Length: 309
Length: 290
Image (tube, rainbow over all chains, first blue to last red; front, top):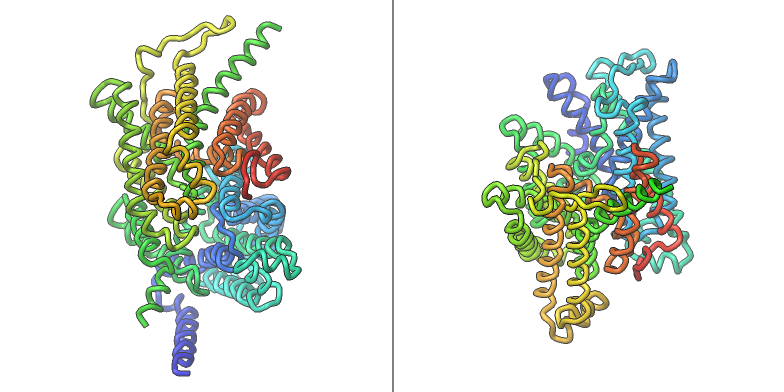
């Protein structure tokens, strides 16, 4: 009981803090917090795919980047496309891609699945990179509109932060709710014993496909938000680097915990900012930290915290 | 008519040379996977290390052939270290952890290479003895590519001999099909794993050394071959050496002829092949377990 109260207090305190951030933090800090919130959703989709669905994706930036590109192309080419519709467009395109590839992927087991996600990621990346007329190739796409939402200007960092917070919050809630639904339970039963789930009579592949499509959709949403956050997108949103980052975030936070992705993205954003401020070789240090965490604390930071208690 | 045929032959040879190179890298990957059930993502970075070591060796010693012998051995040694001190530690943690740690290693090696040698492509000259060219059906063909072809073929035969005829090969084949049983029969499997890891990374290093003068040496080369290599192993079937041979041949030809037709999206052909194979047989051409 005591523990429960403590969690409740921590939750309330973080919620109040999250609402107050725009008033108490300097601008660049608020920017980082916004990035953390957006990336947390992305990391959550990766973590859920592994933890709930037992699927290890090496090419998760595919959905993120596709969402970002679809949203941006929508804002650029469809006249009067509203803010929300643009974001949703990104999510839908990414979800559709997840569905199409998923129909093919869910039949594969562990290692094949991982290999294929990486291969598809590289394929789409290559197409985006070479198809300069539409995607801008290496130069990326910038100067796309940032429409107002219900008359509220999204150009104001505080407003954009609140919007990201609400959207990510809603998406995370749906993710959490999903694990409580019968469909979510089926997927989890597949993860713990696929043979048995099949034998009881569940349609294993269909349940996995639903999960993959849903997570692809959310990854696309976070991609669209990220595009508006950066006000510029390039192939870096869809390349291996981004797929690596999401893996780092999820593992640093702890893949077995609901809040792991948020903690992970927080550490990722702050650490990369901090390390890059005093050395050019920060990515190397990051990789070493990652190897150490994976070998000594496979359950990430939250795993360490729990062990201490 | 004549010129069409000679173009086809030349393209086929190009494809063969690249296919053989792919085979050298993919065979190491598939061997290690078949045995340890670990997909070593870092495998491609050992290939890259081979190329960079060879560049360094060329600068210091000035002889390509010394590098061809020494560099792959150094790379193989690193592979053994990786198995002994990193993979074995996390082995109990299961596949995901092993998987992720090789991913971290790939990342770190990439960054180290960028740090030490910079990001610009480095020139590795073709060794003088092979810098000439050969006439094939009225076309001038670089001798070095023929060298890649025959050298890799030699390695393939050597590998097949070891696997089929020696005691080590028998142990490895047995461990691929049931490693617990082999272990129970009294073989020191961890030591065999270490050795196989060494051989696998040695092969990757060898491919890197001979790839240096053929494909340019730059930090992106690991990722580039990694994807092709994955396509090869998935198409051929994970863990199958024969599958690796056949699939590398196919992918080499596809990428060589694909460039003739749609240069910008040549990579799509290899993916199509993979997709078709996997739809028909999800475990790959020669794979047993999907």
